[in-house]
Image 1 (spheres, rainbow, N blue to C red):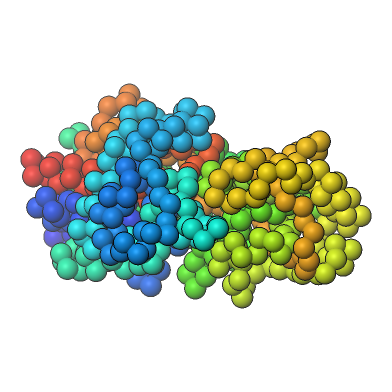
Image 2 (image 1 turned 180 degrees about the vertical axis):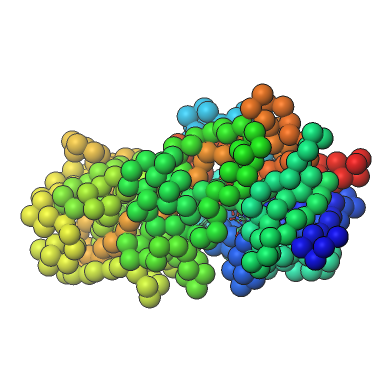
Length: 498
Ligand SMILES: Cc1cc2nc3c(=O)[nH]c(=O)nc-3n(C[C@H](O)[C@H](O)[C@H](O)COP(=O)(O)OP(=O)(O)OC[C@H]3O[C@@H](n4cnc5c(N)ncnc54)[C@H](O)[C@@H]3O)c2cc1C
């Protein structure tokens, strides 16, 4: 074998959450595993590193949550209202959010295996915590968690990736950095390895099975425009610059079936002056997700969405796309002081686009690019339409709504009347794309006749058919984890049999 050839049982392409789950699961089954990562070591972990670590798993009450977070004390629990997130609730959310298009078989596997997969991750060194301040606010002296979002990876994505790479090291699973996979090797019996560029040198890696876990195409401006449509080339990317759709294209090139919502993606509100790709020193803090407590203003000085349609967890992934559609692709979130205590840390970072003033007349010219006269009319009309006839409560859909506006605000619609007023400039930040490869419930990549391509498995962002139109926060990591584990185990089984 020449120095530019290598050989192993299972090649895992990528080194984010889905890939690490696959690699560790394959190793656990006795396979020799080699991981390829396009990025340098200091940028390893892809989008998974950028996450806040929200983890949408089933929990049937306090006992389940305590299994995932064993260091919770009785004193902690005394001030917390935590109900359930049952399989049925999860199915309902996936159905409603995807307009009943999510692949039922994949969705079922993802949901039913979510808790056991979280437990498995825990045995590998991943820790969890309660998602304080993300999906639960302290209100009337109690914390309440809503929307299925009680659990978060301890320390967010950075700690998640650190934990995974510590485990890889412990198991002696090698990761080749700056080694992007380029194409798949196959013969009539199936996939037999990959061709990669190892630090500039073309390298052939023979293997008995390949797991693709190398992300969607969100960081590829050409593919964004081609599939998502005009204007998406200008979107900022919230995470890694390395997820350019190569894994998807490698599989399509050997006859894999594309599936899912190719013109859809997860995109959120993101600081208008954020860099073109994510910045690990800021992580996910360019996001501005607390718009349910503000009014959103576009360049015309008008509101354009129902900010309080639902908890942000169920709207944030589609409202980035709404911002992209506005003139100039930007908007301002305008708050008063009544909800300042509910704003996450993301609203207090140094690198953000914020203006403040004691009156709306003073604020208007500071909202760069906005029709000031129209903005003042919009605020006045909003304040007159806000009817404080039920108490404000951030932990429930409180029904505190406006009446009579062209676009009403359905919940949390308090008038803006407590200065100083503060506003945050946002644009669209794309997170990941929804279209991808068709897999079956064994994570086997399907060909265009919907038959498994022998030796090829996939997990994570590059799998299509799970998300359409919208997304509930915390589902990306769990989908990658569940199908990553399955892919790793299946790949190891195949390697053993060949
Ligand atoms: C700012 C932000 C916040 C988020 N917050 C959350 C959250 O709180 N909870 C949640 O569930 N999800 C969250 N997500 C979504 C989540 O990050 C993804 O759904 C999930 O991490 C995807 O995991 P993955 O392993 O498929 O991809 P990634 O983690 O992106 O890993 C893909 C890897 O493949 C590598 N790669 C790409 N091309 C190649 C190639 N040709 N060869 C070799 N390697 C390659 C990349 O460098 C990368 O390391 C967030 C995303 C972002 C950007």
